[in-house]
Length: 57
Image 1 (cartoon, one colour):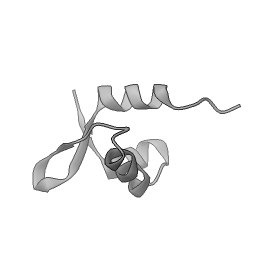
Image 2: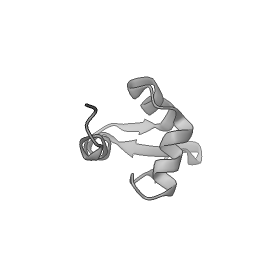
Image 3: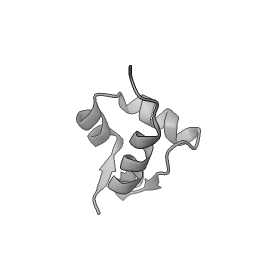
């Protein structure tokens, strides 16, 4: 199980880190505090969140 920072999420998905921070603040995404007090997300949580997003048409 890898822990991904918000910057890692931005690099993986193209969605800005500030948008990921908004998802965490609105409790749509569960995050933990990692080293140096950074927000980190597990791979499983990221997968669950992405599957819950609406599909593009």
